[in-house]
Length: 153
Image: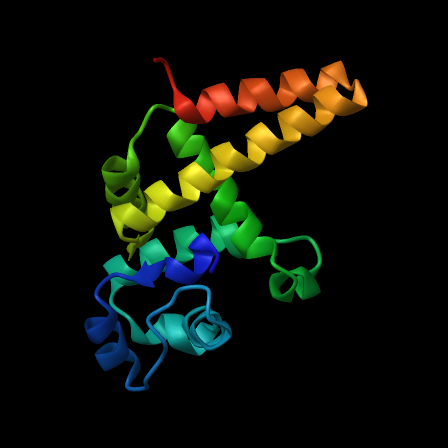
């Protein structure tokens, strides 16, 4: 299961109550995206919630081609955001705190840790394959990206 399947709306019950309709708790669920980010959905929530939802929409749902919203674009953008937070030196607990403050979404720190661990293992595999293929540039890129995720030892 992808990390984006484990990102949830903070204050879900409150938002559902304001919308007067039920939506899934998962942020990247098609139904959640459709209802929350329609003009009608945004008009029903309080100002503070609307501001955070608009920030989320601007940062993760604003794609050049409107069909990209259904091709994994928002999920890829959010994964990049998580990796950038880790590259800044934040641990799983801090990453969850930042995403919660920024966008009113949350994940469990253990899920974030698992995602980061999987990312490191993937980069190790890329580095090893690049070594076998003799692609020094790719090997160096994978090594640097891995070091950004792992941080100083």
